[in-house]
Image (cartoon, rainbow, N blue to C red; front, top):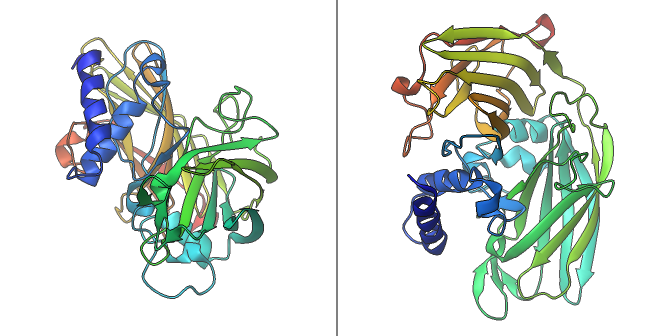
Length: 369
């Protein structure tokens, strides 16, 4: 598909996204859009994107940096229909990592708020495991009822009323190459039982993308939220404290090759909340038009929920920094299976998409048993 045709289809998608398009197709178009060269999308993509996001991207040749999100239903219908007891994160259904954070007491209560006229924004709770910084934002306003926000021109979902959000650390946002902040965050409603609550998530990185060792254990983030119909932006100073040192860091440097494709896993980092995988795929000329990603399975054969990722493609080599919701329990090993991304494929990768001969097993140390 050529660039102009893809742009036209994406514009049409934007126009009709609230109609009958399925969440899966919508999510795949979102990521395809995010993978377009910067010059085609710089005026069209918000800093923060609404979830859900799943796997799909156009093949972009040349040196291209892109981000993608795999937040699946975690933000869309994330919180169970039961009264709140303890941490709200413990009620999240789809993201087992965030749910584990709530159940294991890894979240932090926060009392940070800002008011303007009769409107109040309050951060109630955070989770930070060294990679993911997640916060819950409660909104109170006379023009907000049951998750529906009156902008003065129309009534929309609260999540649709967010015009822009910026997230910065030490004054550095996503546009600063030395920033810890990646190229975009993710947000959505917390669910039907908490319609006036939003979940925001940001992935942190070191400037060189290669290690989490330089990310501080605690920091303050400056968050600026702009709501439709409100002239004043809301500015919040949110503290984050790393809640766990239960971290596994491995550098297996394992490589498998077959049929002109070389797959290497260079680093695996695991916390109770997030599993991070650094890998690269090198393609020869015959396979250079393929877009390949990696699915992660635990020792019980369960596929871990894919979250966000950042990748860079230069010539025929793709390097990717992928994050997954950590598995329940303490797996003994991971199986990493590269697969070819196909348009309109299911969120669960079909067997015929996996590339035989490239599977890599990574054993986890004894302390994770």
